[in-house]
Amino acid sequence: MKKQNTIKPLFDLPDSEELFAHFNSLILQKKYADALNFGKSKKTDFASTYNFYIGLAICYSGIEKPKEALKTLIEAAAIFPNNSDIYYYLGSAYFDVKNYEDSEKCFLRSLELFPESKKIERSECLNNLGILYWNDLRREEAVNSWKASVKENPFNNKALENIKEFVNEYGEPKASNQLFDDLYHFQNIHKKKYFELTAKNKFDSIEETEDWFEIVTKKWHDTVETILPEIGSMTSAQRTSLYESVTIDYSTIGKKLKSKKKSPKETSKSFRKGFSFVDEILLQFIPLTIPILTVYGLEKERFEEIAGGAKATEDEEDLFFWAFDFLELILEASTDVSAAEKKSLLLEAEQIALEYLDEDDAEDAIRLTRELCHDLFRDLASIKLNKDLGKNFS
Image (cartoon, rainbow, N blue to C red; front, side, top):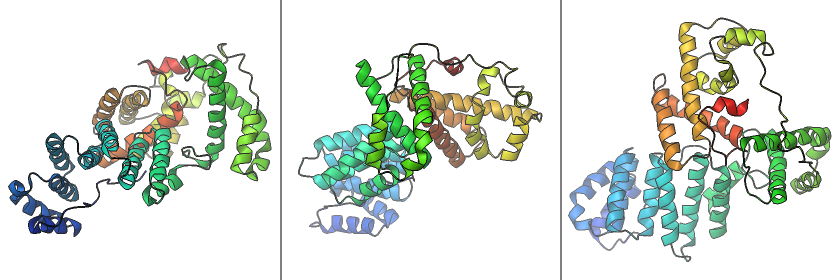
């Protein structure tokens, strides 16, 4: 999702006081520096007006000082602890500094405080929650929030645009590639059926998940892909009906379906030669380092040369190990860890990224790698992985 600033101009401000009206007018004209100077000089006059603090926060956001905006709104929340508007803007301010955990809490608190009659405000709050969830790779929750936003206010164009851009024809989060939308829909249908069959709501182990995933994916290839041309002419409802009609035998779940990890002899000799400096367990994660290395600047041609057997330089070896350290943190942050643990892991990953990248490139590397990991773990999301990720994929 494109970066969005969720703080919006002031609304429903009292204009009976000339001074406050002037402050609001400067903000609406986007003269944020002038408004900030004026507002700070009149703080004693406006201290009892909650919209004043929102105005200051908008000014700080407008001059790209998000931390000052956050500080101002935290102060306001202490003064006005049950004000729905304050929590709405505080959620936006936390979002702007990428503190998604506290941002979510504030938006939910704002939603709780907004009465049912405030349909427009509740819709905006739900739309922002959707944006937050999507940025945090909680895609199903994002879709549900946008749908709830439109239910509150059918004319919320921002929520409608988000649904159009990020929700597929099945009402599910769009895949990174449209070709996978049907595969994921097929998997979602049969995951639900499997949970109903086993009377549970999540997989009990990585082994069970891997077995289920292999069975369902094989069924897709064996039955559905053989009639892909016909599927292309079907409506989404017809395809859903077709996918639901497929019967899958899960009797082998729990039995070892996967072959043991390939030995070095079975691995491509040229690939193994090029990455001879990499431990066998880490070899399987080489493809996931590509976005990181691409952002850094390692040319794709050079990567292919090494994969083809060319000897990596000492600097290139160091770069790969740096990428592995970064990747391990993103992988673990992509699993079912607490919000606090996720935040800590991503902050650590950012520090590692900054060893080679500037701030913008570090953010891009984190975003691209998290998107890859999200796809990798979408069916393992409820399972806490061990620190040694290698043995979980043996």
